[in-house]
Length: 273
Image (cartoon, rainbow, N blue to C red; front, side):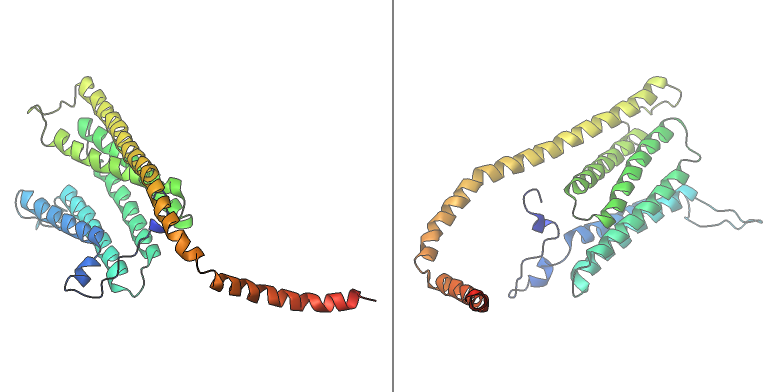
């Protein structure tokens, strides 16, 4: 991706023979989204206390488990996005990148709406954690929306990757803060030090993720610089073979020059007295 724009949407290598030909062409990213979303749905249902119902039987009826249903909606969006990726890459006769990007942007819009309403009853540590996550999703949504009109801008790819990494790492950190504290003691909503350190941890995540991307970019750059001379040497070794047979090139030049001479002949005839 760093050195070749054609790697943006790479085609799977063609494998005409072998029983694993179709498996090789399956969208691994789409399958990973489907599997991860399905596992999260199963986990959410299993962790719900009591039966997961939409409404109770009282009069007037009331909605039940609002946060759990929002979680399930988020995970369902992930599954649908995975199905769109698999459909685009493996079912359609030609890959439709616009469909994939559109589904991703639509999922991000719905995710942002769900997160904004998710924090209505939150306070303290939980509100701070979700607010930082909402800021990342909002910035990611802006980048994804801009990519719909400028899909080949390198800076947007880097920002998208960076924001996705931050969102993933912060989601894992949020799970430890809210449900599995490392110290074994829950964070205190009334303690200002805990509230301040939530933002501090988020800033550490941003710096660490930036360093990781910088390390990957630097490794790729130096690997490319180190292996580029060897590639040039192999190309120079193959060059004499092409230079030893210049006849096709000479014929091509003759065919190009001949029409030019024919076009210039009438001009010369008119200019001569």
